[in-house]
Length: 491
Image 1 (spheres, helix red, strand yellow):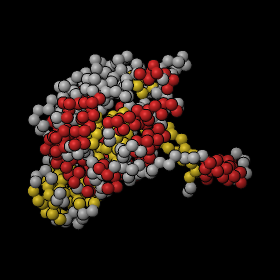
Image 2: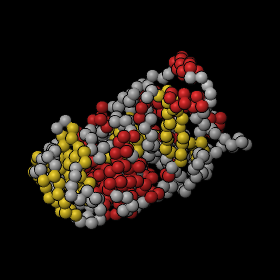
Image 3: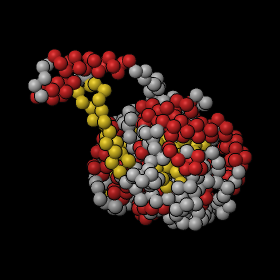
């Protein structure tokens, strides 16, 4: 049935500052039925639709590429989140640069830096304030260094054949941001003309920008362009992207791509974002399902059903970011050990092998088991990196095995039947001759099971045991609680 372009969005505030969107389409048949009930002659709706289409056709629509033109380097990329304040005792660009060789060798491609801008002082939370309370979009936080220090960091990142995206807060600024003095009219206000915090939130340290004002769009676009043009960054992670109009992001993407090909990550889970603006979005719902699965709150069947619903909801070219932790989860909801218990490695394997791009939050390779303070200095305790080898194996497999590439470039998830499907999540992915087979006991109970599959017969490398294995049509396994195995074709 043909759909006419009538739609509306309902924004619904969700936990952790996320907003979800639903689009409802109204068909021509539905409109005809409605109008017939209003005793309007059948010919009239047809005429009305024709006039509506003609009117819409007279307005010049932006010519945005669908999908956005993803940089070639992102096809097999992995991503790593950097909390500069807590990354080192110094908390500077220069100190972070010392870790670049290690991160490159670990298999990291994209470095996502949490906001680097100066933080407002008015209504500040804690001693140092929130990274997401932006004072000046055109400057850097002096705690981290200077603009020249940042320029040098970008140069070194590129020299190590990695890429850098900045965390961008487009929805709100600090109460004392420079724009509150130079452009107070681009903010939302109450009936008395006072600035307001973002509606539906408890974010008392920031105030809402007004995206009904075209000047807000143009000023924010200029700020986004500045860091790409002047510092050669490679894209952005866009905070609460659903709280800003999609049209803003569409236009921003076109402007940025005119400077250089960029990579865009939305902190949102909205399919329409992928049409013109973003390569990648958060797989928040999958993450929450993992937490629930670890807690025994949902079954493996329910998790599998979620994955299928999620697959159908998004276009096949969309990249989904898979993760077991990030700055929000770690600081507000608990460390991976608090949420996932003894299943930490099992869920890390899962998030790195289902369709999507795997994220590692700084400190996970050090088995970090503390919630990092959000408004105070609280450096990561690196120790001897007990999980470095574990994450290196996973990330390097993602980078080199085409079955795990991103979006349409990777293989689809094919579920494998076992004799213990209520405990074992077994699947394979295949692309252009590359194969990855994953078996995970996602329970706190041991399990003996058989796997029977003609599709997976052959010779493989056991990723975590560095040995060749031969899989027949039927194989028997005995797994301890949370045990996993990953078999792959040679790299």
